[in-house]
Image 1: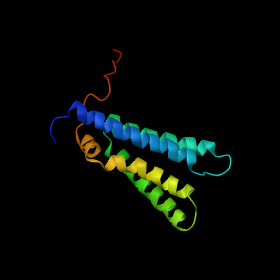
Image 2: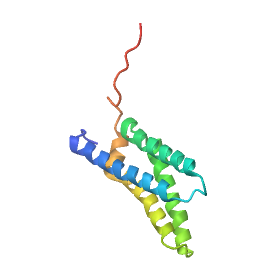
Image 3: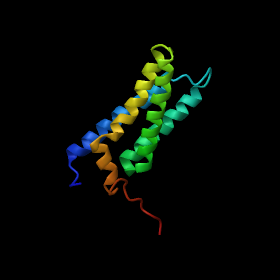
Image 4: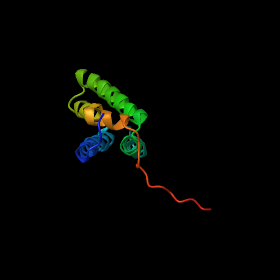
Length: 127
C-alpha cells in the first residue's frame, strides 16, 4: 500500500460511479410490487449512501454490505432466470452483479484499507 496517486482516486471514483449506475438501474427495474415506488427509492437511497460511505469515509462495512447484497441479489434472480423466468431476471441479476463487482477490484480494496484523511472539511465550532 503505497502513496495514493490521483490516478488511483480517479479509478476508484469511476468504479464507484459504475456501481452507482447499477444501483439506479437495478432499483428501477426490480419488481417491488404494484405501487411500491417508494420501496424502490428507499433501496436506491440505501445503495447510494453505502457507495458514498465507501468513497468518502473508506467504509469497509459499506463495501461488504454492497458486495453481499449484490451477490445475493444476483444469485436469487439468476435462479429465477434458470427456472424459466425469461430475460427480465437475467437483466436484474446482471445489474446486481454490476454493483458488486467494482467493489471487489484492487483499487477499491486498497482505497478502503487506507486511513481516511481529509475526507471531510473541518467544521468550525462555536466558542
